[in-house]
Image 1 (cartoon, rainbow, N blue to C red):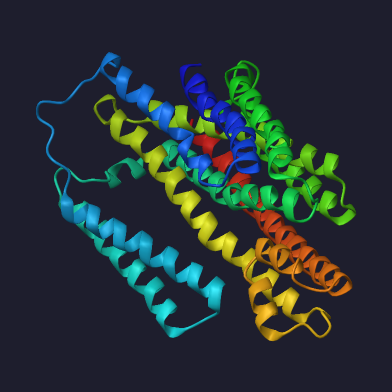
Image 2: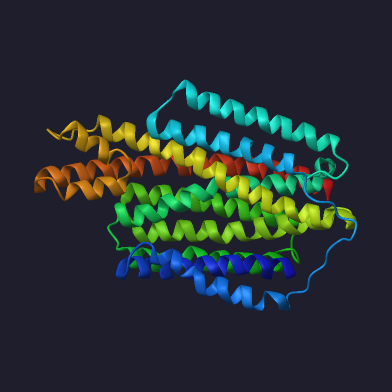
Length: 363
């Protein structure tokens, strides 16, 4: 229950963030969404001294070389994928990905040699921990980029204002809170592996509904789909975190807990870089192949950047030409979003494969 409460605070923040950010952007300026964090940060700094702290007197300083190797590895891979999505394949970007993977290998080698590694690879010998961590990683990888695409869809395709789109995003955030709090209840009736598998199947159903919703342009159906994804994701993240911490030796629980942050952070970055790049490539390819009339090449180049750029350039075009370009851009964006959600379904099927039998046998 403690872990469920901990994770639900993030979901609650996700519920409050979109409407607040949408309101600020709609009625002030986009930078106000960042300034809104200042009061909360100030409150944290003021009251942080009340938080209990503990420091291991025998703890060593983090290995700086390991930190540097991990940063180069992650940034190299993400940069390569993002630039490929922006400008297409080039040897420079392939080299960037290869360099990132090379430094990732060096990072792993160094962790194996250190007595106090930045990332304790021995924890991966624990089968339950590894499976739970993989499930969380795949969950975050599968839905971080789609969540961002959905927010853009509400504004760029459905035509909602920033404020209204923010209000609509409350629904999936609230169902995520509900799913998180339901996780401990589910374990009273099912094994942990079964409860997590139920969450996986709910997310798969939600992704299917989202795809259907985009095919028929039905916003209530779309909201139902993303809400189901939030509901199903709650048990996966909550029970996965609990399994990771409980399966580690007592003296390594802090390292095991840190792995959850590593998995979610890494999964989010790869999701945006990989799935986001796929959506961008499909959007540009589809828009460039569309019949857009006698629109200047420079104008099409701007519209091909993203759907927001297309919406901005439409205002400078004649009415009929602009509407035709906007429709083509919306169709291209929708196609990219559909493909990405289809990939998430595949990823969650893989997650179910890793959870059901292996996790039950290792429990």
